[in-house]
Length: 310
Image 1 (cartoon, rainbow, N blue to C red):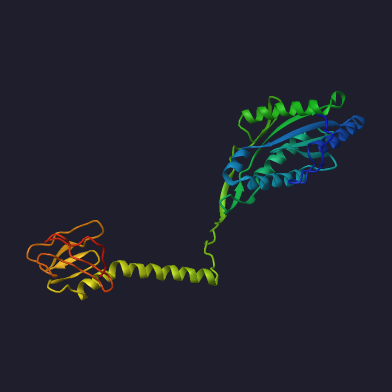
Image 2: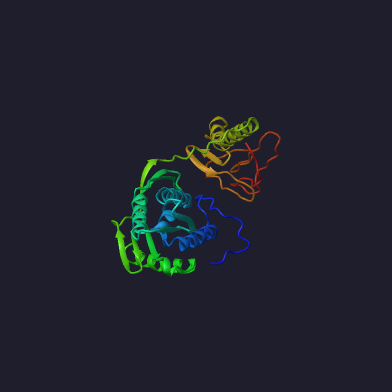
């Protein structure tokens, strides 16, 4: 484990623990003291169970809150006088202990499992809801070395990592030293309890004075268009009958004695029913509005195709 020369930080900002490289410096100092005092040295590699499920289900901010909670547990359980703790990376933590009793590392590991299991973390999920996460667990790989066989930090990490792999493969939520199972707790998966449901705010926006006027203009324009297109022709049919014809003329046709014939438009000629007479020549209809010059068709019995308006 060689510290890169460009590592700018020594403390993990999320958990407040020493980062991997700062932990290595403190662990090397503890290892040298153990050689002088004749103490045993133990290394614990702590890895949270199902941590990816926490990130995927409730979001990465929820995962950050869990990591910070586990860091508090480590500070509570591990005495700084007898041990060095740090964040190894991701959801893994390192604990090195100098001890004179072989049972001391096992007791610390079991205490870590119990305190992590009792951990309850309030988080804000990606949905915005406030949830309480419980049943968090961890797997711990442990290695211990007597004073006469103290090696380098790298060898201790490899041995603890191998023990951690056995703990993961054999059910998680347990402490393992190599192939030996030292402690096991009941299998658990992180659970969440809804505390407060998030209701998003209504996306209503306030309009300024000019925007309100523009919306009103658009509304009245729409009403005017509706009246002009649909109501005005009906009124004209009733109120403006054609002389000599029992009915009235609308924008789209002629109503005669309760029947309807389409009104002629540009390029169209409509045949007038037999028996209907109006205008100057028999069998023809010629309609003109004031100011519009209309004429009868050239053939009897038809209506001029020139456009006209009532």
